[in-house]
Length: 379
Image 1 (cartoon, one colour):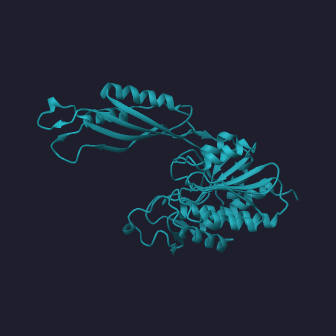
Image 2 (image 1 turned 135 degrees about the vertical axis):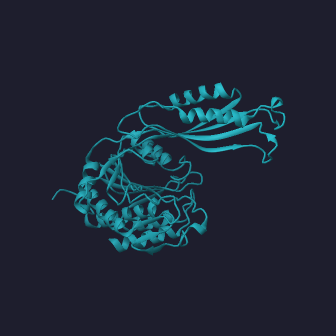
Image 3 (image 1 turned 135 degrees about the horizontal axis):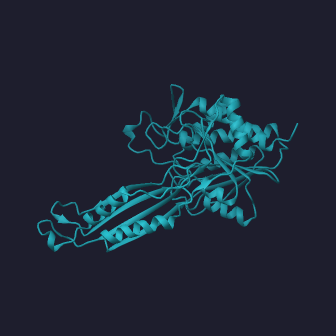
C-alpha cells in the first residue's frame, strides 16, 4: 500500500487547494472511490466543495473524515522547494498539506480501497466525508454535511478524522476531544486629536490596550481536568493613521479563547464585556462561535485504533484533548464516537511542511486494521 499512498499524496499536494478552493482534489478522490464501488454524492455549499461517499449499507456507519483545503504557503522564499510541487528528502514528503492533511487523507483512501477489495460484503456502511472548508470559516463544509445527514435521519456511529495528531510519529497520540473556540472582535471608540494636546482627545488605543492587558492577566475559570486549561490569546491589534502625531480615535483587536468544558461561551463573553465597560465605555463587541468543546466516549472505535497502533508500531498511544479545533467538533455532537488519528503535526501550517514516508505507510495499515475490526464479518 505504501507506493499507492505515496502516489496519491503526490497528486493531492500538486493541487493548489487553498481554502476554500478544492482545486480538483475531490473529483480525483471521488473517481478513485467510485472505482472501488462507493456511491458518490457531491454536496457543495456556496464556494465550498463537500463529498459524501458510501460503500455497503446498514449499521454501523463508520466515517473517515478529512479536508482537501490547505492554508496559504506564505512567503515562497521560506520554502526549500515549491510548496505545491511535492519533493522527497531524507525520507520525508514535502509540500503544503503533506501533513495537514493530504497525507492522512491519501492513507485513508488507499486503506478503504484495500479494505473493500478484501471485504466486498463487509458489515455496515463505510463512508467518506471530505470538505474544502476546514481551514477557513468552517461554515459551509462538514457542519453543513452533518446537518444534511441529520435531516435524512442518517446517524454516524464511528468517525475517524485523519488530522495530524502525532507528536513525533503517527500513532503516538490520538485526539479524543477538543476544547471549544470563541473569537471576539473588539472595536473601541475615542476622539482623534493631536498628540501635543491629549487633553483635547480620547486615545482609543490606550483604552483598548488597558482592557487587553487586564484580560491577558486574568486567571480564567478552571474546566474539566481532562482538558488543557482555558487559553486567552490576542491575535490582532490595529490603531492609528500611520502618522506619528495623531491620537487614534478608533482601535480594534481580535482575540481568541480555547476553552474546556463545562465552560460556556456566555461566561467568557460576560467577563470580557465587564472589563471593556470599565476601560472603554464606547465600544463594540462581536463574537464568532468556532465550535463547542467535546469529549468523545470510549468505545469500539478507540479500542480498535489503539489495538491497530500497538500491533503496527509497538507503542501505546497517548489519549489527548489538546491542540486546536477540527471538524470533529461538528460530528461528535450528533452522537458519534470520534477520534483523530494522523501523521506527526510538527510542521503543519509551517514552511517546509512535510510528512514522514514511514508515517504514511503505518497509517494505511492502521486504518485498514481499524476498519477490519469494526466492519469485517466474523471469521
